[in-house]
Image (cartoon, rainbow, N blue to C red; front, side):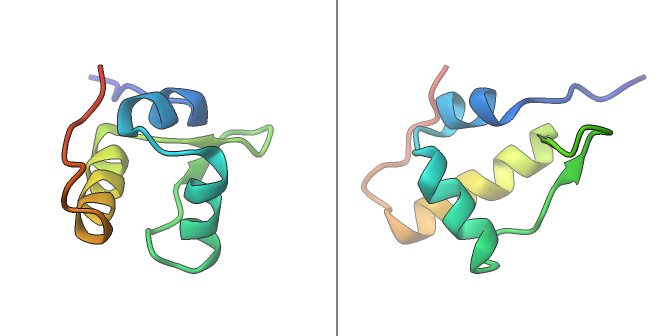
Length: 68
């Protein structure tokens, strides 16, 4: 069974952070890098989203909701 791949836009909506925040976390190695498609765009798995949410909740525990 193939895993679902999410776009950056999907992740931003689900996690509730800005694009700049996500890319800063990657740049400063706060979250692990994800795979990229053949065009060089990041693709995220559900596990990647969980890792991003865990980090977000560590730095901002008051905001623990995952968005739809």
